[in-house]
Image (cartoon, rainbow, N blue to C red; front, side, top):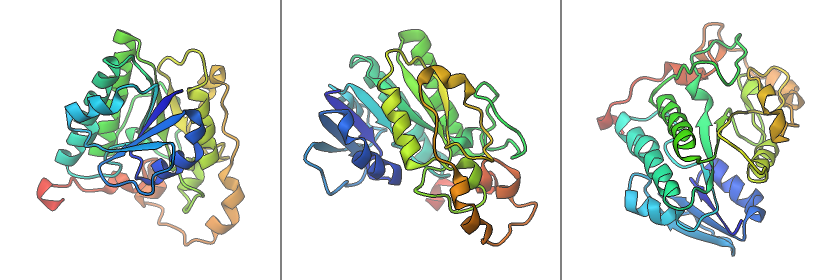
Length: 266
């Protein structure tokens, strides 16, 4: 690619992606609502509020691919989530439609299915069960991607990210962990395949106790290689959680217990 756009470039996954995926394009356009210093030689930084339609259209212009990590990533008030994750996704897809339809990686979330019990193994075609306004906004984003693909042919990889960190830090992450290496191998493959379509991909490593089935993706040529079992001994040294704790019962963990946040509280 000549130019890859990475939104949410100031976040944890965004910073990692900038370092590890810079080889995917001659130029990396990075954006966020806050400064993103330091800027690498092949990076072009643009401050962008995803709710600002004109700015998003300018952001997407001349990009060959989009890694969309931007938006609110935790439970917040509806006003904040609506602006970044709902209006922002609308603006991004409209901008892509009007700019040659660059292939998109949409960072969805396990919180689209957070109210499934941890004893249930999920396939990508099972109904969503979001665990809050954040999860609802990601269900909306998935629907936008699917509609734009059906109506306009816009290709998107919908990646339901579990827990993308350097290493798992609690027992729930033994199932949801998505290693940096597996994440980057997936993004490389998404932009390499001749035809993508609009698949839902579970963003998790090959964890022995995982909850999600990616067997529908054999055609993609990607399979996770890392396993959270590497960290089993140190995780087992952590205190046990109560049997009725949300992070023990539900796939969405503590998000299932988050209160509805009023706008005045943010």
